[in-house]
Image (tube, rainbow, N blue to C red):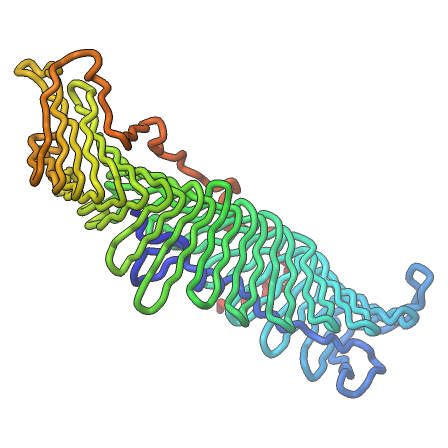
Length: 487
């Protein structure tokens, strides 16, 4: 059984994708500037011209322009800016700076150009935009800052890096006032331990809430868990929700000898300090190298290593099918150790030599396993058994039909039926080999090998791996800054 899936948490069920880690390298903590480039503005925005080769007036596109040209260096209380030139369009309340480097207390910004509207506090950074803070670096060709709305807009692809890993997206928004961000278009996140991709990502860091939409794919390299779905939700309570037409999780055991797959319409996980749970709903299918099952509902509780199947469940273990309204299983090292089912379940085993179907039913059924092989099955109250015999040449040789008011026990040797015994008010008979007896069945007979889940196809990323190269040739000012800090 998958010992947990979405979002790794070290205790309890082994969750796969650690969104706590993901958030640390996608939580872009921008402190964008209120650029005070108006030379005659209020005192708090006043700019000091530290250096410029020359200043002159002119006309650009019919607009009067004041120009600072050649190695321009400007300073305000909040920032220091270097630029090749700065144009002030007085009639338009607009400034245009070229080949800029802006330093603040918390970050440095580079861009090929900056447009700033002093009337509405709207900034446009264009061409090889880089924002570097103490903990992360952002790369994009277009970034807008609507300071009055506390909104940052990335209309071009964005690359975000920190010491943990990298995020890529085709566009993004950051709402500074509510500390929320949305990334859209081929979102990818990767670090040394995991990889995730989706069509879009929404996050609110204040509430520790994260949502991924569309073609979600994730791998946890440490826990060896992979999952896909249409939607993933995670919040600060430890609750996780994965949905999709075929939400899928795969776990490879630590020994890499066993693999478990879980598919469902909806998978919910809840991690607390003491327990870990995983519930799957609608068209649930489980496939592993040890067993497989179907149901409408599957409930897993890590603290006692039990799972429960409800609503028309069927479970297959080797050549045995168990069918009952409720099936409960106790696991040990990913193997089934004990099964129970009620009310009125039936176990059917296909004889590996003759293909005949042994059957066992009762009000309650208990199955005991040893090293992955069934050891005995006990049915309680109103027990019934059909056992097909073989002769000395392993040919079919009739069957035994038995009913008892009390319990009956079928014993197995190396997973194959060996002998049985029954208690209290036993009524049994031997039926010789004949065509009319071959297909004899108990009233609640169920044998559906065609419904047994097959091993799902292994899903792979749809997007190419995140490249190590930055998305554009690095600006000369940025290269010089990096080189100077390496000396």
